[in-house]
Image 1 (cartoon, rainbow, N blue to C red):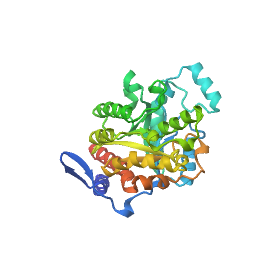
Image 2 (image 1 turned 180 degrees about the horizontal axis):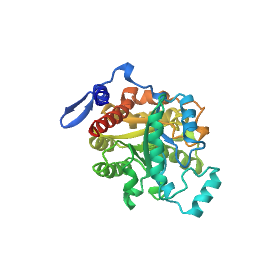
Image 3 (image 1 turned 60 degrees about the vertical axis):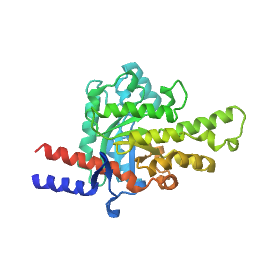
Length: 326
């Protein structure tokens, strides 16, 4: 058994090929045959209280839809609901109460994720939590975070008095996440950080009586050049990733949006920042639809090499823990 663990660890090290430059981690390009393609990777799948069917069946849906790598997670706040609120939520969403015990539910979810990760040979599964960004201000529930292989931060206008966050707000969150990562040494993802702003710009224009076609590129821009430089300085060489979710496909019909997205994101990619791709699937309606992250990733410069970085990192962490447990 020890030899098997050693071989797994050696394989992960070979895939990672980490070097140190100026005190920062740099990842060498992986072998082509060692990579998963973008449409095989889904690093944001809700599989706890919100899943529509038993867990193994839910994973079957995802595998049949082409996935080979999954990050299974759930919203942490759903496990804090009072009984009356929970029952109303279950009834509204027509869901079964998979984790009814408010004391053990969170631990049981992580155990279920670990068990299915160990039992499935047709898909690589990681486990995590999605935590609302407002908890960075209000205080974190740290105990369940200890069981996560990945922690994702739910970014939305709910934490910003109804205004969709932009570059300045994102940077302030990044600084907080960096501090949290000093305690929880796992990869972290900023979930859907960009699309809310682009949608808000379009909604505001339509409400004011303008046509969407009248919106200028400058109105869609998320970052200033100074903000891009600041973000690069914070995230380059870090284990904090930004998400590009399936919702981007609908935005990719507007050439002005594409131009703004590209000017916002491409400099970050060129500077070495890392991204993830996902469906943010909550139920079957998110599956069976075209999942084509390469469509929007190509012009942004986000490649399979870039997105595979977090997978290699997670495999290396697992291998190291396995060795240390011997």
